Amino acid sequence: MSTFDAEVVVIGTGTVGGFVARELVRAGIDVIAIDKDAPAHENSSHGGQTRMFRTAYSRRCAVVPLLRRARALWLRLQDELGVTLFVPSGALLVGHRDADSTAETLRSAHAHDLPARQLDIDEARNRWPFSSQSATTMWPFWDEAAGCCAPTPR
Ligand SMILES: Cc1cc2nc3c(=O)[nH]c(=O)nc-3n(C[C@H](O)[C@H](O)[C@H](O)COP(=O)(O)OP(=O)(O)OC[C@H]3O[C@@H](n4cnc5c(N)ncnc54)[C@H](O)[C@@H]3O)c2cc1C
Image (tube, rainbow, N blue to C red; front, side):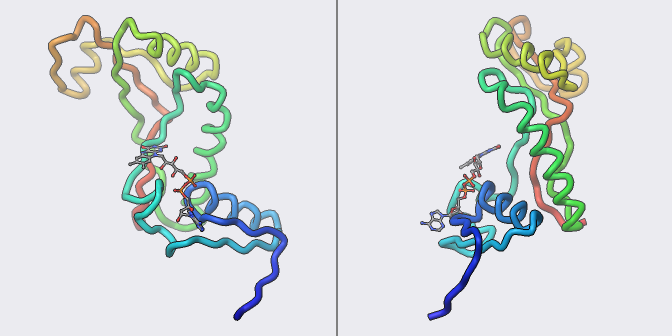
């Protein structure tokens, strides 16, 4: 049986564990990372081809500074690896005008000075020609710093 020695063992190399292991290595720490499956497998939360990345949140606005940092780290990682990981597409969020989450998202965006703004319904429709019977109650919101994580070779 092989024996390994390290300062830190990371168990589970999914989204969080994978990043943690990489950052520890960057900090000069000797790391072993273990997973029950081969990297990039489909059997856990990170499996699949894409994940949406938003910056404007309603209830958990305390995470916004962490999201900013995470976004910067995704961008740095893709440059290091020479692949596209983060596609900075922005995101259109559509909610109900009177919902609490709508006001909270807007408050959070302002509080954190995010490049996000409420859209006029006509502006939204011109840009994305979707249809809805309830245009008077719709609340389109543009999250400029959002995107998706979609690994693709450059
Ligand atoms: C269908 C779906 C859609 C989602 N969409 C989004 C989205 O659009 N945007 C977004 O931000 N989030 C999304 N999420 C959530 C996001 O994918 C997860 O929050 C994130 O991947 C969790 O990361 P994690 O490192 O905690 O877990 P995981 O990425 O699941 O990693 C856990 C790792 O631990 C390993 N492991 C488990 N048990 C053991 C063991 N006993 N020994 C060794 N290794 C073990 C697993 O194999 C796995 O590799 C989505 C999740 C799902 C399921």
